[in-house]
Image (cartoon, rainbow, N blue to C red):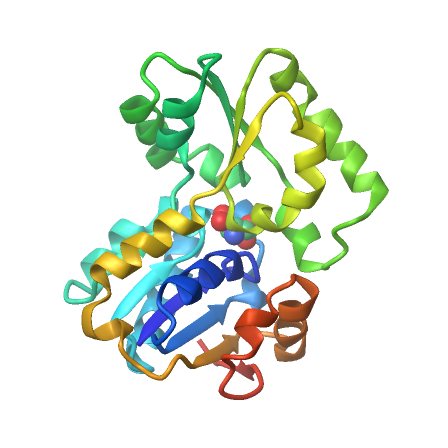
Length: 261
Ligand code: DGL
């Protein structure tokens, strides 16, 4: 069984790709809704949550864990590896490498939470994979919370996003990395803003391919899905159709459940 978690519903974008790549895997998704957003918390807080959730997913029977959250990966995947040495882990990190490789202008932008933006792990990723490429790191406070409200087509937000991206686009960024799993659900708002100038880069499919590589026996099951959350199970359940994820809804083994983690 594969466990996938995020601070909220953002990781459903990754879960969806994993479900498609591994149709017979049994999946558990945990949304730490009681503690979101992670993006404005300190590293020690995020680490505590990640370690508790990792342990909980193992107790539920998960033998492969996907940290479907860039913020949690940056702050805590190393600690999680230490605490669960026998469990294969897949972290989600901003697609700096594919974006830098695809850039024709030699200039990319990475949209992240405040926490990821200041992380040493992102600095290292940029040093390793974007040597000669200019990288603008743009923290986007409030965007993940906006996705959680499921009000994605708000004209005021679209205008704020346009203003936020205007300087980097004007300066020539031609790849815009969605460096937070929530932002995948903002693609319909962001795509028209960058159209003709830049491409949005998301790593969900690459993460799913990594799960296929590591899956082994963890990926063999009955194609079921359990949804767990630390608050508001009804909202997590409602998010599937609202985000166009009916494909996931058909795998559900039952209604979303509250989990004490
Ligand atoms: N979805 C998470 C990420 O990928 C963060 C959202 C939050 O701030 O909780 O970074």
